[in-house]
Length: 80
Figure 1 (cartoon, helix red, strand yellow):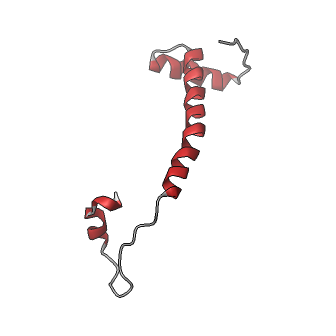
Figure 2 (cartoon, one colour; figure 1 turned 90 degrees about the vertical axis):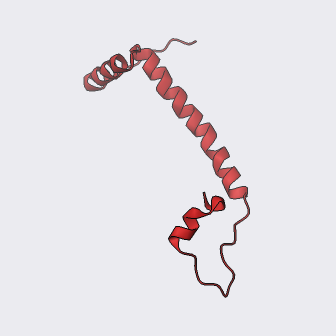
């Protein structure tokens, strides 16, 4: 681990202490958890988007067929 020094506005520091106390953590552990969560999101989101965009589009109707109803779309397992 690497030690760092932070300079926070009084209101931000007060919020951080209250949030940490409410979570049963120290302020630094709350801070570390927030940054770890952000790093995970920045790493996982592009991968999830790439997997989604790699999927082939699903045909929901033939050219002659009417559009499906909202209810019928939500009943299908492929649409979930």
